[in-house]
Length: 358
Image 1 (tube, rainbow, N blue to C red):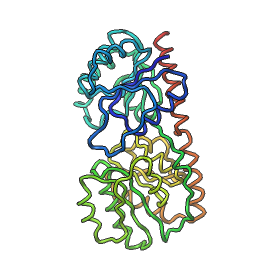
Image 2 (cartoon, rainbow, N blue to C red):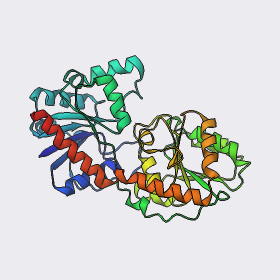
Image 3 (cartoon, one colour):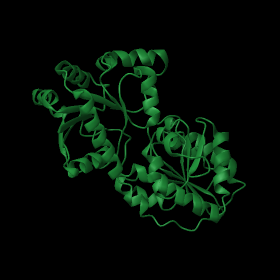
Image 4 (tube, rainbow, N blue to C red):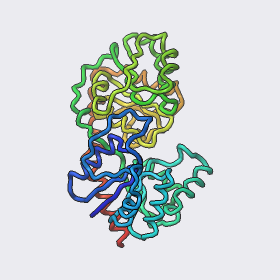
């Protein structure tokens, strides 16, 4: 079985997944990336262990032949004219293809967004036989609302190699020296402003608690001014993909307060590290895996008071309660390890082909 995936860039988590699928040798996997890298991302380029091509390198005719000839084509992107041309090309062949995406509606919400996606994904909208792979159950619910119930849907969330997070040996917990970790870009969408506001509210009453901000971005200057009253806010800077576990090992609670994240691997990284996760209900992975008081807490997006309340609850856990929650966290991340992710991809590919052949 030959499978061709068309996606945006070789992000580290996709590279890990595609390398794992290729190593399994159950399918012949090829990937067409639009670009070699995203200028807004600082990740070090990965050494790809799967067959890869880059649309920006040219050779369009060769790539069009691949799109026409593959046993199954999985489109993981559509907001590019060339990709939409390739979608139309594959649709004309009447051969198996599917769309794989995060929950729709963030960039273009409301009725305008629905109209936009029906135009940009015309072949998907008008051909109810074409399956959709949702990156999480939250995504599937969103696509069902827009694209109907008559087509098949498959649960294929992003996963990555979590082993380096599982290898972290957790330090004994004390609320007198607890560290809260934020990992992500310093932009409004990630909710880092709300987190800093919530932390400043609790800092005076909890003198041993610290906030670790891992990442970089345009809001860094604002955040530094906002938190200069506290000597317990640490700016860690940018960590490359292979070094993230170093920051996770020195924290006790992970906070992912994004105003919106279609999936959010950070939640699974935190859980695999043995940290309870406080995340907004607008994060896809958190909606799927966080169980209130068992492995973390869900909070309302854009709501520092809600965030403050859950932070207080987590910080005041006894060492015994924290030990229980840490075990729950690691257990809840297991279905999202790289092996499980590769297996879900393979099953979805097989069942998608069977659906087309029926």
